[in-house]
View 1 (cartoon, rainbow, N blue to C red):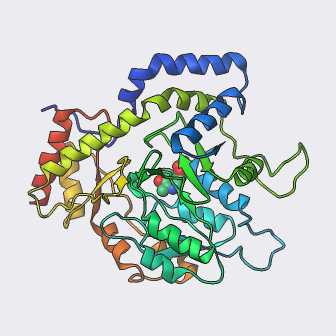
View 2: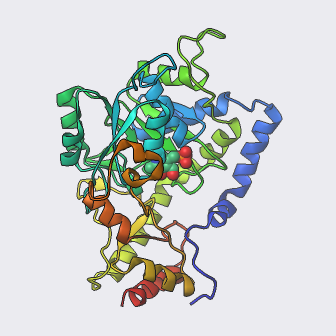
View 3: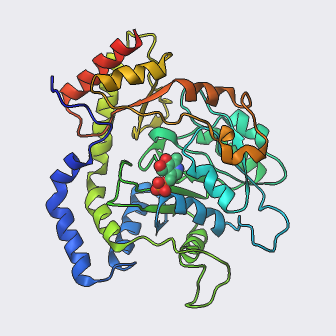
Length: 377
Ligand SMILES: Cc1ncc(COP(=O)(O)O)c(C=O)c1O
């Protein structure tokens, strides 16, 4: 058993294996001095579109900007001259802040939906209740690397004629019924934040879509809404991806499936280790889903105490997420209150993310499992 604490993630181990390739790719970009756009950005767009099984991909500056650009490209954007907001967008209340933050920044009203207690993803039943005549889009999140119930969500969306913008920030390569995340709705929004399964060397993101016209609109929004040069049909932003990021991602992409598999093997180890522990609820993966385990999140009754014990005994862990979005201070004016989304509120109280990154060693997995079992006793 090693003495060093088990980190929640260790990016250095992965980098050590591909260091030579990454530095050669960076040198190529540096020598070209084509730092924004160019061949590397075009190449990563093509490669990720192929990987996700969609027609088009537009590289962007972050996952957050991918969400915002997708909304703006769909015309969900409030101008200073509009007297009303840009309509409503339904998001799960249990997700990373960016999902709802982008809706707000676009000038639309985030409308929250509760989640499923097993998958932590948006509940189709709660979604249906949240729809109004002002609903402009539905944004399901494929949380922790597992697809939301896209059969039910797409059925509702198609029946009502509402576009679906998938938040795939944590789910590149995840699939449901053989269809990859991002290929169900109007588009999918990816994040290349360094701790994602495909992490860049800084911020980065992408919109993937089967709708070529929509992808062109996202590309226009990415560059201040400009097309042709110095002519602006609508207002956009600077949402461009650096060529250095594209070069790094191109080196990493061929390894992605093996990294997913390593995460899945780690998850299988934990599932088995916790099988006889009724106090530890392991993540449930819908049988139609292939999870890429961006996070491995368990539920334990004495979560806050368990974290202290784990940390004191050399196991790093994290809470994703301690407070659902409908209870966040910045959204108080929306008028939600505690009790509105009981499942999300309960999960926020007892969820706990354990180390799951691909390069974890067997002794580290054993230490995490042993310490968590002790911590819940
Ligand atoms: C669900 C979700 N949506 C959006 C984002 C935003 O991505 P980024 O950090 O690349 O801006 C994240 C990133 O953590 C996320 O987890």
